[in-house]
Image 1 (cartoon, protein in one colour):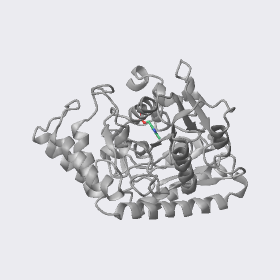
Image 2: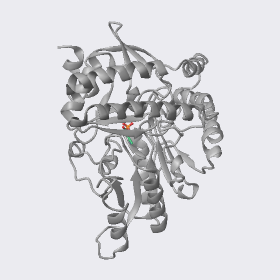
Image 3: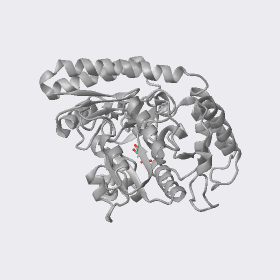
Image 4: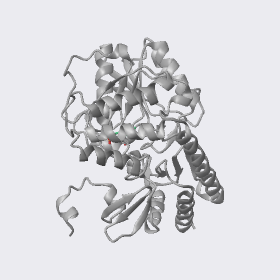
Length: 416
Ligand code: PLP
């Protein structure tokens, strides 16, 4: 038995699909302790949009550490935080005409979600929140209460309350008009629906199975929220920071959510960092009413700032992400056509792509076959039935060719 199996809790998960010991990483490539290379099409579940150990970000981090830049500073004013805030304002908020104040809610995505839910309830004085089928918002109790997956919900150990699920886009395969049920419940004083403080939504459901809501559906949701005075919380933890092309996955829908959750790739380098963006009029917190020890890890501010400067000063990354995504989508459409009996479905937007199989077992076998051939990808969806691709946005065309070849071979091995 190795030290991991001996000491690490059974709760570990990714190490089960990829049972090797990783050591080094660079760009889209990770290496195990024996030096074997793997192409990483999972990118830290979306935390490594700019690749592993991105050299530009690494240099900024090394310089900062070398000059004894402060590492831990609670929520005190620091040069690292100042530079981040100025850069975020200049590169992200102002060009998109977005007016948000920034909460540093703690290091992870679930922290960003908890802050959003708490604030929405405080502002409105209502406790009920609308979430969507197959949503994933994190593993803390508030975030779990708005998450769909029954296995994960089961882990809570207490009732998960004050959330009402509604059908996400295409839940009924387009058989009913969008929001038919939701709108009826809102408008019927006899429906029994508790008046919601907020709606929480993902633009593309990552963990839920790469379900991409149409832009029209997202716009319709924003309009519905505005009409009924419901706050719109947009969870861009996994699909933000350029994953679908634009910096925010809601931009192409032309909406401006009331609250936005960001984490994963916002730190740029895989360092823990999260933000909850709130419309200024929602900033009703008392000082210290929501705080914590790790709410601004200065090295993450440094790499976050460098990532914004390097990749978000123009629209090159957005364009290349969309183009690479279209290339993968075309390859996936060919695969779907090549196996008419297998009822595959190609899914996604930008560089969040997936193929749905008839069972979790099949998708799992494909990912295992890919791992044997040196490619890391994961499954998603309620039964793990979707083979999910989240390559770094900096992935090269040659690496895409290499990855697609492995995917072709792996699917052929499993389906033939
Ligand atoms: N929200 C979304 C949309 C996510 O995909 C995730 C994680 O996958 C989270 C929240 C939770 O983030 P974390 O695991 O950093 O708590």
